[in-house]
Amino acid sequence: MVAAHPQQRVSDLLAQHAQRIASLAKALRDEPGFEPSRHDDIWLLRYCLSYPDTASASRAAARGLSWRLKNQQDGVTRRVMALPIDAWPGYLECVPYLGLHVFMAEDAALLVALLVLRRCQFREMAAKVPTQTIIAFLTHLKEYTFAVTDAATRRSGVLHKTLRINLCAGISREIVSPYLWMATARANSGSATAFPQLLHAELHADPPPLLQLLFNRLVKPLLPPKTVEKMALVSTGADGDASAVVGGLLGEANVPDVLGGRLLLGSGLLSGSLREQDEARSAEAGAASPPCEPAPPSRPPYTDALVQHHEPPPSAGPVHSSPGQSGSARLLLGLGAAVALAVATAVFAPRDGGGVARGSFAR
Image (cartoon, rainbow, N blue to C red; front, side, top):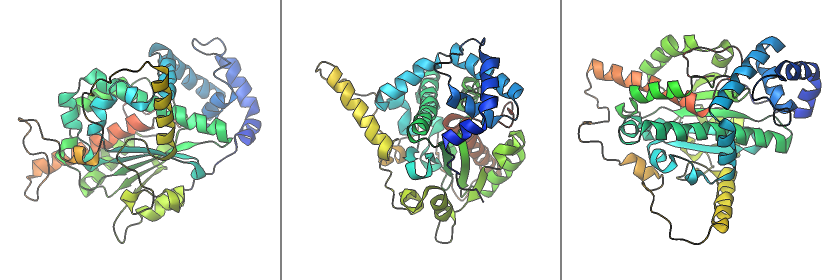
């Protein structure tokens, strides 16, 4: 059973780790990209909590700074916190293919990323959207996850983390896209230590037996032990435990409707207070711009109906599994599910400490 988020006070943690924070700041003072005014005690604290000693924390922070400097991530941070989400690169092109919902459970100090795999169409997205557009959008989404969590930590004085929930029921072969998997892996190859102390727990609801086998044999051995401890399998339905587990982590009022709860997610990527903040940014952007006729989007906004009723490419053939699948088709479906979970893990919440697992996709 995944433990509840302890909601530690930042002031207590800073006092407890003051000596290590000072040592880490000293070790990083000559590191390219390190700026004490931006990389303050709270930023340093996350590395102290993620790594057992100053030396390993310093190496991880230096790698993270190098990656951020190389990829100009500070500019991405400014964009995701200033622009409405539909102004991000690739938003309109990518979101219709992603059954993703992101919301903040303030009472639990957790940012929730809920991925409905039956609504994901990675294969079609890879076929129709340029790879660089996909990577640009996912980069902004990853940075948004960390920036919003960090902002909530500073605003509330309580360390915020993320909860990932992957709903695996009803998945199809449409999630199979090895090319997208490899492209995402390359894009994330240097970011493993750039987002410390982010993940609290990861829940997989209703994974097929073959997926469980592949995940246990192929994916889990690549992950740090601390990450494995944060993962749990849950089930939905009348006798399932998913609603109770999520309710224990988030509070009953924050159980999403797709798990039988009262929280209505709606049809957009952002829900609740995050959607309100995004609408405020959109209004500010509109007020700051001269009136003009908006250009039509390249794709309509995300809706459940849009995701569920996409026409497959002419050469793709049927994309949904059927009871009469051959053994090779079932294996492909299982591998696709494993790939989808790996991609989701890489995209929506990077690793913390406990070591860096080369080639893995979860933190």
